[in-house]
Length: 167
Image 1 (cartoon, one colour):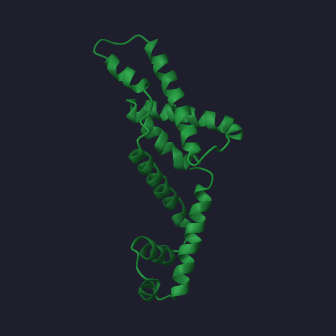
Image 2 (cartoon, helix red, strand yellow):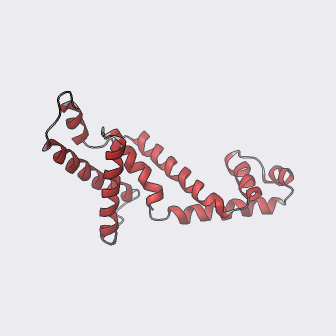
Image 3 (cartoon, helix red, strand yellow):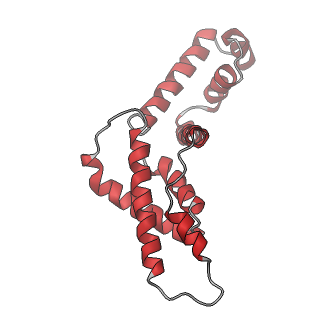
C-alpha cells in the first residue's frame, strides 16, 4: 500500500509548500497513523480510502505548521502567507483526483510488470493500450489470439488484486 500511496502523500506535502525533506517526514508520519489505525478504517463509499488518507495528511500538515510556528524564524525566512496557504485544505478538484488515480494505476503496473515475461507484457500493452486486434498482436508476437486475450486477463486480474481496497 505504501509503495502506491507515498508519492501521492508526498506530492500533497509539496503542494502545501513543504520542502522535500519535510514532505518526506510528513508522509512518514501519515503512514505511521495509517499503520496504527487501518483496522478502524471502514470503506464508506468509492474512493474513501484516499479521502481518509487526505484527512490524515491535512491533520499532519496542520501539526507540522503549528510546530513550525512555535519555532523562532530567522530574518528573511519563509513568508507567513506560505504558512497560511499550507493550512488550507488540499485541493479536491476532480481533475487532480483523476490524475492521482492514473498515477496510482501507473505505479501499480510498474510494480507488477516484473511478475510477467517480457513478451506477455508487451502483447498485453499492444492489445490493451494500443487497442490492436488480438489476431494482429498474436501475429506480431508469434502466439495465438487466445494467448493474447489470456495475457490481458491475467495482467488485469493481477492489477485489480494489487489495487483492491486501496482506491
